[in-house]
Image 1 (cartoon, one colour):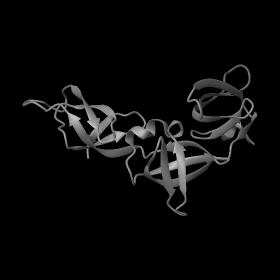
Image 2 (image 1 turned 90 degrees about the vertical axis):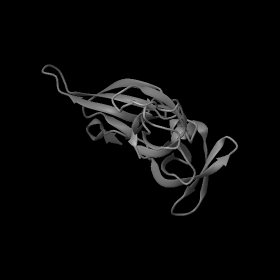
Image 3 (image 1 turned 60 degrees about the vertical axis):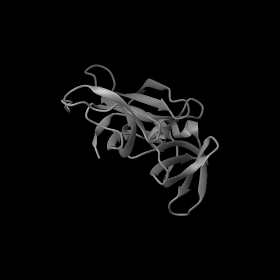
Image 4 (image 1 turned 30 degrees about the horizontal axis):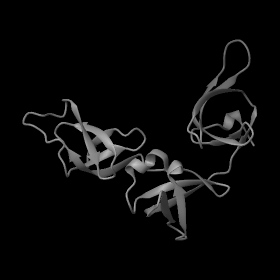
Amino acid sequence: MATTNDLKNGLVLKLDGGDLWTVVEFQHVKPGKGGAFVRTKLKNVMSGKVVDKTFNAGVKVDVATVDKREMQFSYMDGGEFVFMDTETYDMLNVSRASVGDAANYLLENMTATVAINEGNVLYVELPAAVELLVAETEPGLQGDRSTGGTKPATLETGAEIKVPLFITTGEKVKVDTRTGDYLGRA
């Protein structure tokens, strides 16, 4: 158990009969009149649903035990992703639902953080930015500049992002794994 004073981004709480929620944002509020409270934005670990919840200051909340392990993505087995623990070399099958949007930027041999609670995989977390090859995009034209527009590009993982007009097929680009935004050339 912890209090609302211990809340921080990324903390996993057990609320409403055992559902697991991740703290996305939190803000301590001390109004001039009345008691202090904590305003939070919580994301359901399983469904991805985001809700706003307010706690009175000092209230006890149940914190879930989450084991985060560095694992390496090995291969696809049917519809599941197979990860290998980098310390014990144990293999772990992870469902597509647990991998979520990370599947758009995941390549073989890429290292990711896998969060596990009571033997169940909660989510897979990639580094903030990854370098991927542009598999296909329309050719650039003379005069295209970095301050111009954007065009769609398909990455080697199959994900589609918007890139500047000067990017060509075969180039490596940096992509933000949280938003899917182009960050620059690699």
